[in-house]
Amino acid sequence: MQATSVIYKVGLTNVQSMKEQELQQYLIKQYPKEDEGCEWKEFKNLKNDFSGHEKDDVISYVSALANMEGGHLVVGVEDKTLRIVGTDTYNYDVQKARLRLIDQCTNLPSEGLHVEEFVTEDTHKTVWVIHVPRHMKRQPVYAHNKAWQRLDDSLIELTDSRRNAILDEQDEVEKDWSSQIIHDATIDDLDPRAVAKAREKFIELHPERETEIKAWDDATFLNKAKLTIKGQITNSTIILLGREESEHFLSPAVCKIRWMRKKSGTDENEEFGIFSIPMILAVDEVARKIKNATYTYTIEGNMFPDTLLRYDVFTIREPLCNAIAHQDYSLSARIEVVEYEDERLRFKNYGTFLPLSVESVVENDFPESRYRNKFLVEAMRNVKMVETEGGGIRKLYMQQKKRFFPMPKYDLGGQTVICEIEGRVLDENFAKILVNNPNLTLADIILLDKVQKHEHVSEDSLAYLRRKKYVEGRKPNVYLAFSVVKQSKHVGLKTSYIKNKSFDDDYFKKLIIDYITNFGKATRQELTALLENKLPETLSKQQKFDKVTNLLSSLKKKGIIKVIDRKYWVMAKLD
Image (tube, rainbow, N blue to C red; front, top):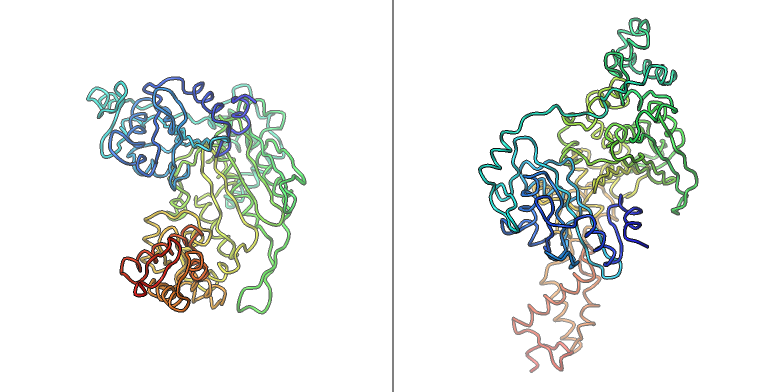
């Protein structure tokens, strides 16, 4: 198989895999030389090289690329030769890296910034390609409080001439693909059922004007609802209202939804379908395909079980309509909906997530001011396909909270946005926490949900949880604090808390001393077996091994125990 064939098959996934030689050939073809738009760097350890010495770390090179026309930083390859050496990504994943770049590179645009990860199948080396967007108008990009640019093979601070060139850039009218007029299209290219549906929704939005709206002809209505521009059909008009046979007007852009249902417990498709324009009708068609069975569970303290649909109407429509509104249609990709029967829904659209993070959208609780498809979003608001006041994502979280279901899960890696919605109580213990801690804010719940799932929590968020006394333990072994757990009145959670918290070092040292005193000597294996089940459950097997090592080293340094015959631990006083 040729490298180009592999890339074609996996190029839109988060992690791409191929043999080392194939990867090198691919990189040489895609990034054949170093210049102002491309850098090759070893950066063998991102713990030190991501944000380390100025002028010689990842963020400095990102600043330099952004201050020209943008470009690509290939990490994990030998400079000059592109020989693959691999990089240790430390605790970074591609999404965490993207967020850290935005945080540490002042003025760096989020649009167009993404990281591709490659892992070689045969040698298990990791290579990152960081795609860096051009700086925003009149805004140099800074790293270490300095703006950088490339000069020959090294970086220098931005020269006066380059800085002035950036600062003197003139405004251009930002192009919105969704508002572009299709001169050959007419009202006859629209689906009458879709136009009627749009009018019905517009009336729901303005009930006081119902008589007036019903009196408008179609051309007047489309203009008033901002679905057309001065009677002219736009890309947005075709997306929302166009006849299926009118989709050629959008080419090479694609506007389709691919839905599939996975058989329970397998990765096989039980059923699938492709849904085309008009999207105002397609959303309902997809929703009808989803098996929305009833779900029954009992909330502690309520003698009668609660029965409800797995997904309310909003929970299905909101992520799907968001995908339509924010899809990057220039990528010619389909919107995808995957239904895992009786489990969860997965929505995927193409295009980077413009806000800093999902959490910032939820916590700020106000509409975004930046949109990829401004005209399309406004049109969808006017026909009630997206929240008229913004805050749709926050409302999605609130709906899950009301049901005591897990919080929505977002994956913003690469050029895609993936939203997963659980249709069940995934963790009964966590549901009980939500029931018995009604004072938890939505932001608190989102963070605690991540702690329960052992997902990454930022340092700032962790500090906040500690201040609120919601968590205990040291990173990465963080667990819910007693103040949260005790409210659940749940024996299992309290037992888990004790196992997580464990005991202090003096307790473990006493166990070691008592064991050696009683039996005269002990091997490392015996002492590990003694302590293993008593150590915190949050520790991995390796961490437990290291913990025992540290305890033994401490006792040895104090002259309490020692090693004989390179195998046995004995009390030092026996010598």
